[in-house]
Image (cartoon, rainbow, N blue to C red):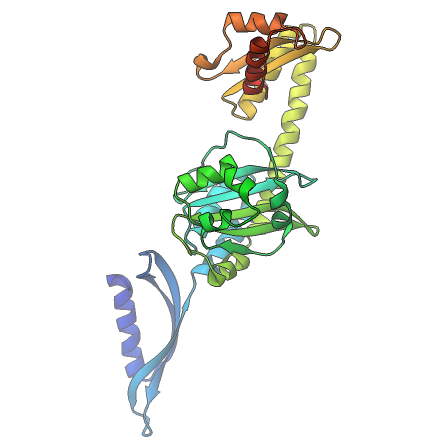
Length: 335
């Protein structure tokens, strides 16, 4: 439904139809389905009887939201040089034409054995941080992720309960999604030079949110170009970080402790780590020692007794209890 201003515009156009004039114009209306405002194009002509008298009008109404969203996404890609800012603006445009409660871009490793959440946003555009950088792709998912066509899942729980998907059902990532109430999803693969390099995943807390209509919508948006550009910017940012890190390590190379502190501080800040530890392994004695650590909050820092255990314990000679403690600490703090 149009608001007062747009209703007045329609009324004025109807007056023109009464005197036999045709027009094409745009107005903003509120969609009854979701309450969102959208632009529509109206092409209207007067309808006359056999004597040429105007007896009404005929109009073709076209929703412009998809077209305008596509244009805006193209403009954002062309003008932005910052991946997070670019993706935030693009996701706002996507939310105007297709419903979602979670928007996730997943990146795949070059050998297609690992994946990570490149970015994740809720429906308001707020970024959701992932605490895991990369994790192995289960074999049962390999072929699905290599599939280069848009697809959707009507019911996530039914999908996970199908035979052969027990591994997926137990994965913490899928367990978390089900616990958070997500019920359906749409996947849009991002292809570069004939190979799937990333995936765009839209999640909804309602069943059967996505179908052929929604698949058509995402295909018409230049989302693959946006993701490829974001990956390019991220690759440049990563290369710049590594070069700067090498330079700082060289500058601190006269002091091992200073090198360790530099590595931990720089990696922790760049990757926004809650916990990070740098250990040294003596291959001759098969001993592991803690060089530097950083943890937020401080409660996660290794205490002195545990630091001594790591410095003195040999993985071959320590007691089973000590070995379990050492292994647990290493897994928790190693980056």
